[in-house]
Image (tube, rainbow over all chains, first blue to last red; front, side):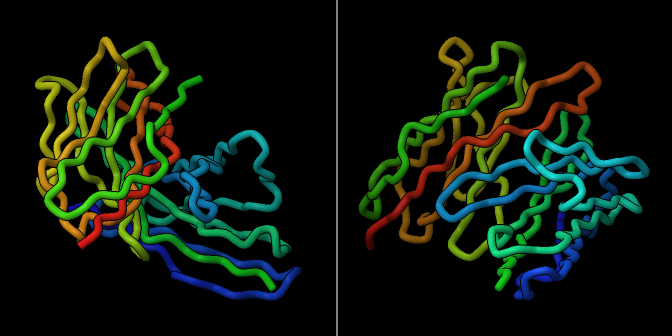
Length: 117
Length: 117
């Protein structure tokens, strides 16, 4: 199998606080993980690519100082939303890339719903 | 840059009806193709994928998709839908690279399928 977990599944915080979201690949090693944001009734928007042991690669328009990504091990990546504001409220989804013989497949976590009051 | 389009935003069918969801991509090179499903309140799950070989790919839950290279299409089909197929369906594409790492996924906007009992 290829299972990816996220923690927490939902979080409510006050404006100005920081929130950390964890993404773990439970039964495989993932040198690359991805962080997405999904707005209601919309598709996934890639925020950044998280590479184990190196700096994350952010997509255009994503503030790297606001969305801190750390990929400390082959099974764990974290996304920290710093000084969160109501406009950061969203559904954050991570995925982990599993190497295959022919090509790779991404497996997705269940997502984390962030609500900033 | 790659883009992925899905023909329908919302499809409503009765149980036992046949389903075809369209997906077209813009990239002219060699690609890997995926269909993901997101059931209400759940995370993205891989339905099927195409890397190479037989362009007709069979996935889980009776779904299949056909890769037509000349049309840059990867349409999803199911001969007889069930109420439990109600979900959001996303087509995704990534560029096939020689090292098999692949580029990041580009997702289509999604198609919401509602199956009436």
